[in-house]
Image 1 (cartoon, rainbow over the protein chains, first blue to last red):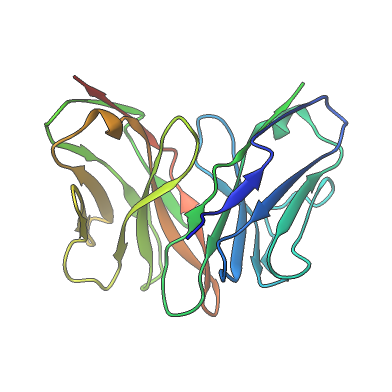
Image 2 (cartoon, each protein chain N blue to C red):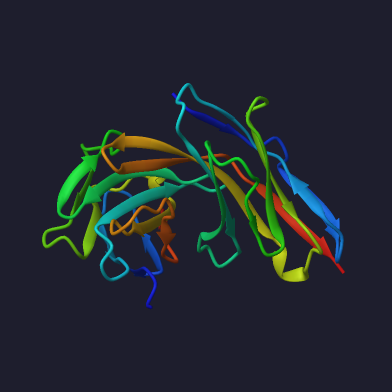
Length: 115
Length: 117
């Protein structure tokens, strides 16, 4: 079974530019999460989708961050415009909903550097 | 609000020895779950072990075991027979329900484990 896929793996941009990240969850996983992990800290949830609906986006900075999951499969996370403090690893995770399981499976992450 | 505390920024262990990574949590929920993830330098979060709040026995997965002490609100990870490949960041996380069957994870700051040959 293929894992969670993310691209790009690395991105370097200048402040005020825009950037987008892509995530493809494990096949059949209805729940998808985006996390932000700043260096030296644990991941922090940005947004959670169930199929193509948003379950929780309370910690998403909506003035600059947006995310969508149009067909309930792939998801994109966008930052516009980027700030220096957005430098972080952006992790995507997915979780199955058939049967009861608590485990989230993570992708390799996208490391963003804002100069 | 929930909180996860990992008080050990870094730990060193000799190869083949056992090591305990500490995690304490704070919650007012009766039903919750605790996770440990490993994050190597490559960046991917790898699930290691899970303990439910109603589980009567401590969880075990191969060389990993979770020392769950509910009254003390602690969920320490024990790695037996450490290997060089165990060198990584280790994160403790707690499940917080988002409604229905949905939940999100709250992570601690992590512990960097270094296994010496």
